[in-house]
Length: 510
Image 1: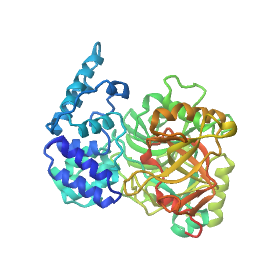
Image 2: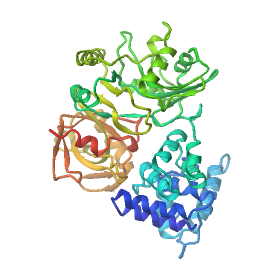
Image 3: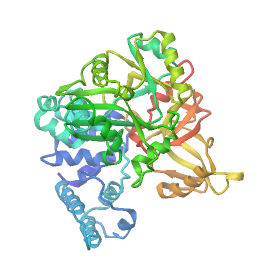
Image 4: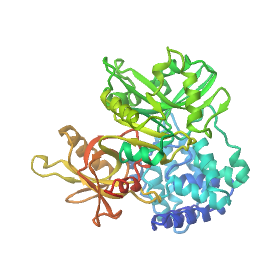
């Protein structure tokens, strides 16, 4: 397959907002792929080389001012081999060798292929082929049920592997993919609930109501004495969290996969600032005074038994048994099963009184549906909050003159397109945050204007809001009401942002 075919399909995906049209273009391409092309194509269209981050920046690429090839000649294997060689080039003199490899690749590429490569290598390939669309395309190309593709992806965490499995072995091969200790599972997510009463009315009384902490999501795997820890984005952080490793290693089991949250507590047992918790995941020299405490709320595997497909009630019973000892009771997320409305309100009051965000209400009959926000888990907070993508920023006025202030906010497009703008805000920003935005945003600029900058959709910010209202001003037909910045979320990517449907769910009476 020619590399130009991938570039053409990428352009077709970028040119439409139709999820069906996007999936059809990718499926047509996958049907023509052979061998390892099946792994490379979905990875590239999702914006990720098979080799991971290649450490190639704009400064290097700007020196590759080679005349483009006049006609397509590169194949998909040609490009994949070049990227593999690039990834393996290290040590003394590697910078010059890497630049020479890139020069050879770009010389053989047409103008459109060069543009695609630049965006792929710098992590700025934004054509809207998000994971969900690619999964739909894999199912169509392999003529297999979408549910089987999504489950295999949930358990493998790899789009390329899922595509290769589906196209080579069909449904039987997909169903043979199982949870593997040491390979993280995509986490199940909670959608926003309008209020505690509304969520209870929606889900009924067969629910668990648990504290919603202001911490970091963790998934912990144990295999004998080997314990490994991943974040919400499936980034391994084992070496940086020895206290979590030690606590899981002390549990009375041989193998386990636990899902939960962790956060730093002060001497009074109240949560420390969110940035204190996150500092443990991003610093080479973390503050020894910041000790993380884990709180587990789900159990996906225990001593040879996979629990993913069991109802939550069964998983909670297994978790309660694992953490039954007095020495382990503090590792359990506080909550109540099958509460009355009064008891559920007491759990919410207790969570808020302890300094936490609110509660999560979970249907007891629901299996573990990884990677999805749905009705089965709904979070309830006194103040609505959303994780949105920063799309741009405007120069401030008055005391904010000379600083990038009013930010443009976008919700994730559930159909796989670019984030959909739903509002702006300049509220809630400290001087320190304004200075950080002014330093940081120009380096992420997609376009620069006299009024400000449009950004590549890379940063996620948490905003508090009073609700939403219908509005023709923005493409999604909805706008935020009284939005204010809570904090930026370095632990989340644009794929983790709240979808447009979550904003629409906050419409008064909607």
